[in-house]
Image (cartoon, helix red, strand yellow):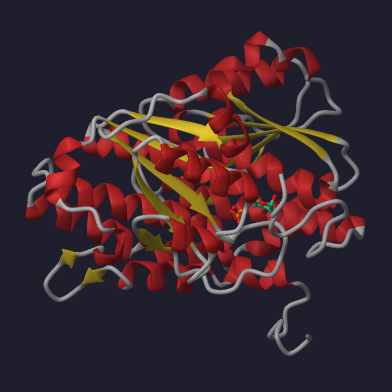
Length: 369
Ligand code: G6P
């Protein structure tokens, strides 16, 4: 087992550090880099079908569900097609309005999750077009669906999903580009631009991973805290949810992810010096609004930890802990912002002495309802 960990203390840590490679593999599996062409033959989604689809449903559990939430921003933003996202455990019980003009995409690392399988079955029975984004080749979902887009994360052993998540996000990016290129929303020049952004992503992740020690210092400082609030806006809102889930899963610290604009409708009541608030600060349209959320936190004595794009910003407060991530563009920011949150959760858990790879009460894949 030690050999399989390749010198890392835990599988989760190894898998966090494998993400640049996993992303390259996922990208290379569908893009011909010389010709700058993207093809997804196994997904079985041609121009004729894309033209017929009126709505896309994305359905999954756990971390894969968070990838779907990110996917909604991408597919709606780039392709201008309406998208609904559902938890698999809810989907079939709400009698969803599925028919021939609907595309259901289930997302799963393992391809074996019982609720997600049931959601796919529901889609098939109701006559929707059913596809899967899956990591494990030949898994149940891969076999049941009418087409598959594989993530190429490689085997993921740690119960808390890391590289499977970021490759799911990349898969959605690739799907959005394929869709938009196929229906003409995106021309070749536009496509090249998006592709270039993706090609620079692995290097940007390396840059974040090289500074992992900074997150270990954060973890050392905050390891005894029992409650955490994570705030994000826009496409980083799902990343706030995912960051909080990572911390809960492996360190057993209570963490809540919230849309920053909703803070005033509840969680603000909890903020004091004992509840650190981690904010995801993406530069762009919503940045000023995030700064005013930070102001509200500081005014209540809350400690601010900020993951910030580009340069550190004094406006986040002198006492704020700041970790910078490289700018990765609007749609790929979720990937670079995910990595520091994974590392923070990992180091907190390790310092608290939990069983990082096999946290209590959790299973890698939940094959019963
Ligand atoms: C379990 C795992 C999670 C995972 C979820 C969905 O709860 O512990 O890490 O996100 O199942 O799994 P799937 O294999 O369908 O992505």
